[in-house]
Every structure is written in structure tokens, then in C-alpha cells.
Length: 386
Image (tube, rainbow, N blue to C red; front, side):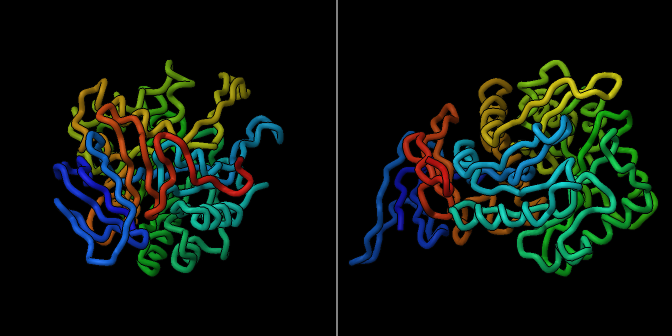
């Protein structure tokens, strides 16, 4: 048990100064002047001067590695547990990415299970860039319905030279199978869409919705800040559907990408509902750049810590309210992805708590009620980490 005193709480909405009792990995009580029954002991910590928000949710991470666009030597490595916690992230959703040929969904699933055993929270997307989508059971819907960690399918590539160029009928079938699998398994059942550099990138989704009974909220397009024209389309599309902004690529490609913190402010100014916007890092994936002939000329990779940095900049530079900025990696992804015990600080929710200075620098982190970071130092690490 841990009793947290004098927390300035954002649930993510501001809830004032209060105490928080953590027990068995969950929030047991919230209120001022909490006391324990006689004979009950708990670790007590006074966090006066710090704000407390939900642990961050990163909905798009290549937890088992990715890449390979430049050959076998350019395959990226698995995410380390410490890298997740260094970014204030307590929950990840893993995906496969470009290489659905030599990598498989099973490896992503096993990495998610490892993260859970080591102290974090993890789910995955089945599938990859390619269509037909690689799966575990042989069917998208079965994967989602029957495998605990699978919440949807993706990232399916559209509007990209690495895409399988699925037809409208194929995209409808993928989304419909995912939806039914989600219904049966009580999951989100969404299609996570990799948005490429082609013009009119949202047109395949729009055509699928037009020719079916599907809704825009059946899709979660990501990398929506990768260039100016995609972002301009996002300011319209986001009024009806979800928009995911990638945080780790901008520092490497500032001349092409829209800075995530700036993108958030611009989307809100364009009238996009805040609940339709999420941030994810694309961490441990490859961040390639190609020339006009399609040749790979540069390859980078990102970290989960990019998300917290952009939230900080959204508050400190763009002057957005804390409770608005933190929603994009707390309550919003929890709602979109139907992660029912995540994303908010309420009694009965998982005890994922991020402790920040007023300047939004991380001090402590609780993951499922256990200390992952103390005084800025990661203390919960994965096997084989020193």
C-alpha cells in the first residue's frame, strides 16, 4: 500500500490538492486527509509541489522492433522496459509495421506478455502494413475476439509506396472483421492506419465509409503530422474521425513534419474536438526518408519519451491548459482504444500515476501500483537490463 499526500491532481481534469491511496495495483481511495485503519501500514510519501496525472498511454510502439527498409542491418531492436518508463509511459500498444514478411505478430504478442510480467501494461495490434494482414489464428476477427492482448488490426499502410494498395472492398472487409471481433471480445476493434506521403491520403478511408455501414471512428489514422498537406487534410478529417499525431519523428525531420505540440494547438483552433486527438510515439520503429526515385537516404528511430516532451511543449510553449494537453496520451487513447482501467485517476482504476514538476518534468512514476521511477531514476527494469 502507498499513501500519497498533497497531490495536485489532474484526473486528467483538475481536481485540486488531495491524497491518493494505492492498494494492490489499483486506486483504493481519493480524498483529503485520508487515514488508514488501525494496524494497517502503508508507505507514505508527501508530494507537495508536484502535480499527478495518469501514466501515459502510447498507442503505437514497435515493441518487438521494426524497420528493415535498408536491408537486414537496418532492422530496429526491441523496446527496453526502461525506455518506456523513462518517457512516463505505463501502457503501450505494440505493432509490427513495414516488415510483415520476416517478422510476425506472434513476436509482438510475446513481447507484450513480457512487458506485463515485468511491470508495465501492454496490448497489441494484429496485422502489419500488408494486405492480406498477417495474423496469429488466421483471421483478424478471431485474433481480436480470442486473444486477450489484441485490440485491433494495424498498422495497415495506405497512401504509401510501401503499401499493398488495398482496394476499397478489401479495406471494408478488414474494418468489418475487426469491428465484429471487437464486439465479440469487448475490444476496440479499430483499424490503425499508417498514413503515407501520397496526396489526398484520407480518400481510401472516406471511400470505405461511403460504400459501407462503417463509421469514421472505426479507423485510427496515424502519422497525421508527417507533412503539411496531410496535416491540412487532418484539420478537416479530425472533425469527424480520430487523428493520431506522431511525436518521435519531428526532431529528425523538422522541415517536413509539423511539430506535435504545434499540431495539437492548430487542430484545436480548427475546431477539431479534443477527444478526437491522440499522440503516439512510433518508438523503436524506423523513421525513413526516401529520395524522389524511392531510394532510402536516411533512417532514424525514436523513443517513447517524445510524447511527454511534446505535452510539455504544448503547455509551456503553446500555452494550452495542462488538462487539455495531457488528454492526448491519457483519457483520449483510453477511450478510443477501450482500455477501461486506464487513462484516468479514479477509485478502482489501475494505479498508473505520473508525478511531475510544475514545469512538467518527471519526478516519480507508478506502474500498476509499483514504483518504476523515483527521483527521476528508473528503478524498474526489464530482464537483461543493467
